[in-house]
Image (tube, rainbow, N blue to C red):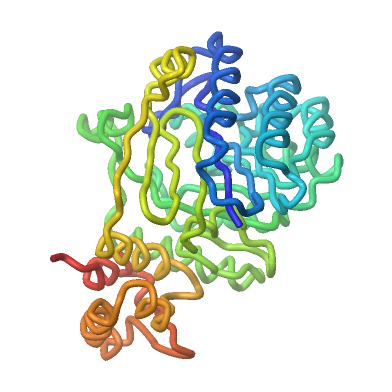
Length: 376
């Protein structure tokens, strides 16, 4: 199986925490869709000859595209790769884009999953973050998507936001549960350099939450969602049974994927490619028939490190036999040796031939992953 990711870089406004590849120059949209379709056509041989199982349109704000844009993209995808075997086709949306008409239009396209960036249900914080929607609009967007037949919805939340309190975070989680969506992703806020929020932090206009609060928020996240019946299948991701993100899981399972659009990454198991991040340079390059991209060849040690980093984040954990088969017995022994102190400290557990994080280990997962990675 294989996967395709399409990056749609347009935003009406920029959120103050965002450092993703995006632009507010929506007048470039037509040229951009042309360039994206051209890349899909010219890279038809990148993926192995296996069926495409998942497609994901992320951003940016893909819900700024209109029906004609989507139909052009899907026609190219189907003609070039075939969508007959696609099990999951996801669109990222902003809540305020989901009018009755827009929801109805999406229901007539091949999308069968929608991922919505809500972030928080606190209106004052949404305003601070320069989000375009209100809590009410987010809830109404979910209702509209349900009415037109979408049965697989995901929402994103952010915790550790400026002014975050235990009470406010619990309210966000309770409201998310009340929406009864199939999937919830929750990420801790990071202050990325060269963002307005980072500059506000440097100017002491906002304060970063302390480490104890961050750990407490994360514990509340796990306890609240698992008590509500969600499966904690990846460190930042929760789903109702059987409703995990098949597309994101392909990244964690080492499945080949093609990424098209500015800054999009591709992976063929032996190397990684990524496109030029500037949307205008990307468009110009594609129009000239010269895709601007970079390549990294992945040696055995690098592939082992990526395997450890991705697998340990998941509920399935690290398959020890697979490590020996894929990377050799030297790295297998290295992994055993470096895992031993964490097993003794009850931060890791080994069962059924798999290494997995314990509840305590999840809270310090970055350090454990670092210890298990090979540094030659």
